[in-house]
Image (cartoon, rainbow, N blue to C red; front, side, top):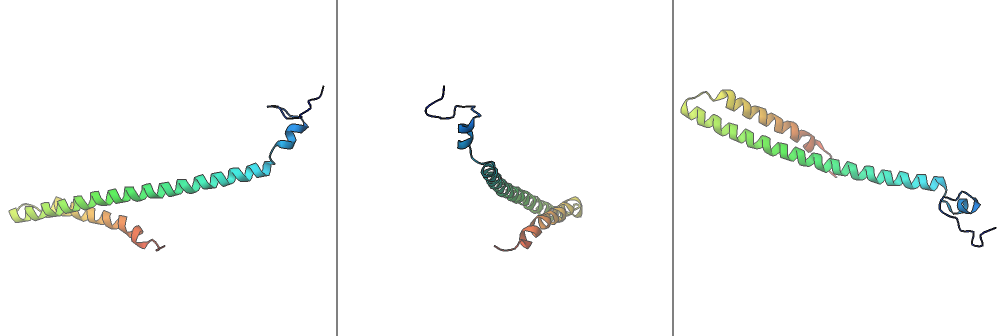
Amino acid sequence: MTDATEEPLEGDIGPAAQATETPPTAVRDELRAYEAEREKRRRRTNARAGLAARCLAALLLAFLAQDSVRTAIEAHAKGDPWLYPPAVIAALCVGGLVVLAVPFLRRPKK
């Protein structure tokens, strides 16, 4: 008994099913394009997340540096030790800001 429509059934491995399948190279090319697009989106998302984390770290370091400088000034006015720890902490925070800012400033303009 032969089927008059010759439509492939689900799971059919006969000649009718083989005629309707897409060539393997087309599927591979489509999967590669899809993976390339996913990788591009992932890199863009990671770059934005990294920039946000650097900005938050820079804000924290700027606040800590400002607070340490203010503390050092107040301690100096009172005659208390002001060089260590307030001025040293301020210098370390400013150094951290420089480390965060240099790659951003050296990035080529688009």
